[in-house]
Length: 461
Image (tube, rainbow, N blue to C red; front, side, top):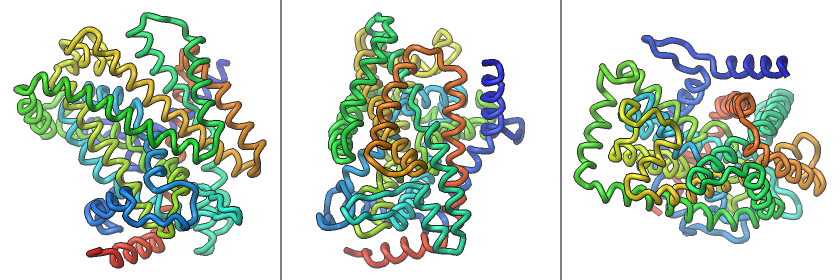
């Protein structure tokens, strides 16, 4: 056990290695993701601006082709991907960013969220360009497929196969969702008073199995209902807090902007505030990690770039909208300041903001947290199944075997003190960004040609 702990510590230290810049530590993996966001924004001609309206037209079904290859609608693909992206990072992660970087971190989260839209667009477009469509109409797609098929087209078949297998292997660890189960239990337990960890873990696993053991169509139908519902519950709760303190909103906005550029901010100046916001925005949007490509690859479309534009809505909804609303809420409620909040941290800060309305109001947050965690766990289970089959062969028993094992592991999230397990899962999760983004750079030429062709053709329609 000691050797295992040491191995996990070594892995975590390597993945989250930080370099000091002007007295502020910046994690290299975060820089790897952030640079890719800027590159894809410039390389693709700011698609989050040029294609934003087009993306909404597509989601609303303006170009829907029921005969197109794929298994779910483009809207259902978006909600399935969002179910894995919109999660506890929007609730606890934002609170951590504000605690570490001050209110100004919210401003930088919004900025990074904007650039994340282009990276998400890029990886999903490539995922659709190189997905595999089977004779029976089923679709296989994801970074492991993109790397293998895409790099083969430019003369690097062995490298593509190697990077694809590495990604799929890392995905098996990155898909484990013990943290989501643990944090949802923490909030539910806080409002219910129950400490039945095993009972909650089993209930959660059974609820996940009821959806996950079905097909992608069943998962997509569930998330098409669940994602809008959970977002409505959570955002509705935040708006009640904001509307209960309307006079504090202008001051909170001014504080956020001022602190973003305050050379004497609590995080160590402007750079410290920027880094705090950048870390959480990069982690929250998951742009560059590649998992969302697996869901988007199932979309019914003949136009890869169209699904890429749909995908850029993910960071917009997840980071630009939901994270910003969360940050504004806890600043207005005043629960973010370590000097006055009694030392609480993470999700407890958001819960305390909800409690400013009424003692029972954190129950609303508990419902939202459960739904956020539930949807993320379902999506991650599907992603892991695709990675497992890529490595060990596609088939009914491989698919079922992974999903059953995945559900049996979930109760451990509520029972165990996560510690090293969370370090391990986080480490392999962000390692996935290395082969995925490397593939984007290598396939940048075909990517830009596809996006330019589509946007030029649809301009003015």
